[in-house]
Amino acid sequence: MDLTNRNKHQYRLGLALAFGTLLVTGTYNSLAKGLTPFLSPMSLLVLSEALTGLFVILTFGIVTLMKAFLALDWKSIRMCVIIGLLNSALAPLLWFTGLQKTSAVNASMLSSVDMICILIFGCFLLKEKISRMRLIGAGVVVSGILVIKFGALNEPVAAHLGDLFIVSGAAVFGFGAVLFKKYLSHVMPELEILIRSVVGVISVVSVSFFMGYSFIEEIIVFPSSKIFLLLSFAFFSRYLNLTFFYEAIERLPITTFSLIMIAAPLSGLLSAVLILGESVRSYQMIGAAIIVFGLLLEQFSVHSMEALHHRWSFMHLPFGKRRHPAIQTVRILSKAGVGA
Image 1 (cartoon, rainbow, N blue to C red):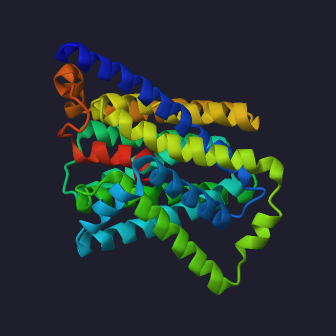
Image 2 (cartoon, helix red, strand yellow; image 1 turned 90 degrees about the horizontal axis):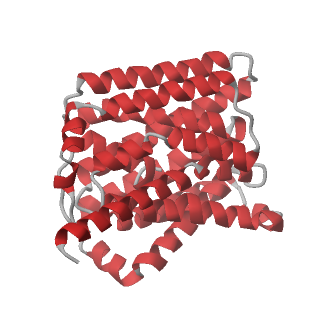
Image 3 (tube, rainbow, N blue to C red; image 1 turned 60 degrees about the vertical axis):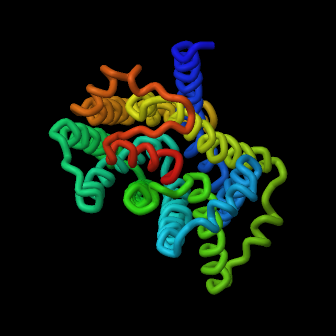
């Protein structure tokens, strides 16, 4: 197979993996929401992070991960721990607490607020200029979120509180992704995910110990009929999400991948309908359409258009190096690999 044909094969495989990522990303809120009646946010966090870490070890091997860990300097380890506290303890705890109170449909829509947070944090921490198109896109996303919120004015107060938790969780996820981009771009992403999971489990278990909270009692009464749901959440929403994500971005330009992932809110909405049987109201559909349009505008910045125009020049074999706008790359990290 010559180089051109091999590149085309890698590109097609990358597209398949990207659409796979889109599909399993949409299941995150629905499967987690299905577990919230049986597991507290802390228990769900501990189990999901522990299973994620286990799957990472089984996939990449403990020896490879340990070698990469021993090669880290203390500054990198400290930042891994900080990001672990943010993105595997605080953010998921906020997110799962929100899912207890609001719908999976709303959570899928409101998660797009991470784009705005990343633009803000990226401007201050990464010193990146925000293009006019990105500002317009962010404004449109905010408009879509406001449509959803105004349409839900008659909803119970608990639902609005749940939405606030989701937005707060998305902001923390975005902040953690920006920190990763700034300080840990040299770290093997799989290693950061493993460290993050370990830190999340240890920190939450430690806090729960001092609070007198017992995971054992909750796990004992966990219905056996829901074990498949828990394993599905860990395998599809966490493990396959991460695996497809990294394999896809090794074969596709970030721009192409991020354009596909624009449909993530719609994927989440569809999963909520099919898995949980949630109803979608007219204001949610309108808000979702506005949010997706805003995400599309955000992608069509000058750099994105140039990358799309020359997408074949970005073709590469696995493990190749590429340069992309930092904020664009950070948002992808927030949605799947490092931030979600």
